[in-house]
Image 1: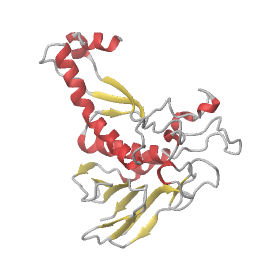
Image 2: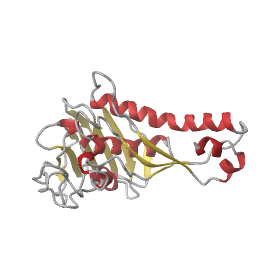
Image 3: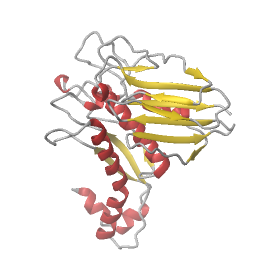
Length: 274
């Protein structure tokens, strides 16, 4: 194991631009298996523990005063459950998880950089040359799914790109299963990403003092299945296939209402115009 040897060398740690981390967070070996919401929260707790874990390792392996380099999480995904109920890296669960990791990284900085890639995101019945590693399809077991069909988690980054402003601002939720992340654009608009990990109940969010228009995009399960859904919809539109996400994305929902309904097991991106 070369990593402990490397981290035991003070000069190596001091000279590192980044320490690179890989993690397939949860293979859900619990019996009975916890809910998807419980597993995702458990994995986010593990994400937040990474920095302290690396710091403790460096402190115990080198001089205690050695500064810790920035952390880059460059290969990761949620992997539960990879056998009994299908590969979660190719379902809505991976999209919800990735959107949450981006939000937690922006607001709390458990790591300093993300590059999402998932060797685990494949169809094991087809071997290693399948799956697109989580971003798109190649070698799908269903021959009716075209090569290049988008994976559900493609829209995690797409939604964040829509709602990510110039600065992150504080936001919180009184509901454990509803995560709220907020940013402000240079022009005064606000971007929100709302993540509902409850597979049964919708959530309602009231935007106090909203005077302008609101545009929104909602990523959710298509045709049932909740977190482990293989087909996802954006604003109610799916791709009509047995797997994946639609392209091109539909037009945003547009409203002037100050209330947002967040469906069960979903990621919602909202822009509130000034």
